[in-house]
Image 1 (spheres, chains in turn blue, purple):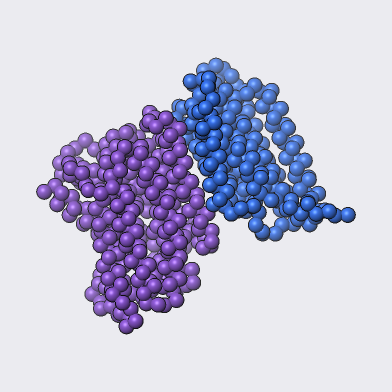
Image 2 (spheres, each protein chain N blue to C red):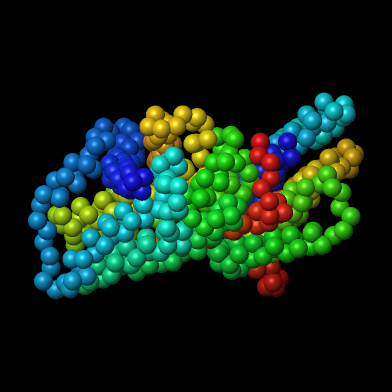
Length: 218
Length: 324
């Protein structure tokens, strides 16, 4: 079973690379949906395992919440936001894509050396899963740095959250249910507020390119 | 003696099967467009017709133009010898040559193809050559890293040794290992980049500004054209063979030895090639041709895939984890 999780963790890492290589906002949303689906699969398998072994139902409930929230609701919300604002096709990233992707590769190598340097990690936790999932966190952060438009930043934030969630899944079989629920509600509020903010920015500056925010507007 | 049989079988299969791949892809494409399309054997007819014709050679061209088709064709065939179609036929002593020579033999053929494109001095040829140079320089790192990783896993640099190792380890149909899955995706991308398939280059265009492979061989006719086309088809089959025999090994399922075992093995090989061909055709149907300046993005992604595979290999502690 652990090698199935290995493969899923690699797929999640791969989806974050694909997200980094995307150019259009529509494809960000699509890739984010796929990544969330992979995470839901991880949670589902783990949840079924825990029901059989320990009788815990909470991880399976978390899985259902992920499907409803991250696979269906938030991507649709983002798409509506995107369709609502005036948009132009323009370059959305700071450097060109091959450089960004190679920097992400460097991040994975960095995480590999950091994680293997930590002593006292339990033997049950597989290094491959830990490295891949922590890399998703840093790549999400880097995604936020590398994009110029507001929706890109939201996607980066959600990817970061996905990374943290999946790290918790792999390392500890899921956080306590109440903590997970709290995080989800936080995230939902954050995304909704950011969606409204995007409308406001678009109204005020006629664009959602955050570079424009540097200019003073009376 | 086994060596001679190996060479004969290898060359016969490559020569006979290679044009079929193009036929199948064209047929599937035509089917999705609700056309009847050319018959599956069309490329054989084309090659047969072209080989009987004389070729027209421009007066302004040098010897490179005349030599290039023969070099392209023979490098493809030589590279084909390094990628066994079935492990059962591989002679007990090593086939001399590893993956580095495999890549460089193909690069030699490609170099002469590009030189021939430049030789006649036509605009199309020069344009095609410069684009081909760009694409191949982008694809080469990822194919080398990919084969290098496979070599690290198998502990050998020769392709048949790698195949034997994968076969000994593979109990399932697909090797369920993170590194292997990444290598599979990387090799699939490499096949598309190396064989001028749709996201990179449209093989069915002729006399268009976007063509790459067609632009280089635009000046060729008759026998020379046949050799060029045949060489490209064989190269495509070589890469597909590499993919199916390295990452989807099948010979461990066949207990029977001798002639019967070899025949069954070849049959399964044939089926696997057809499956991969259908996958390539589906990719070709579902994607549009990339802008020329977007090709580095795809190349970066395929490099990352093979590099991640390399990394996952180290994450597994340098060993080969238990397979499902």
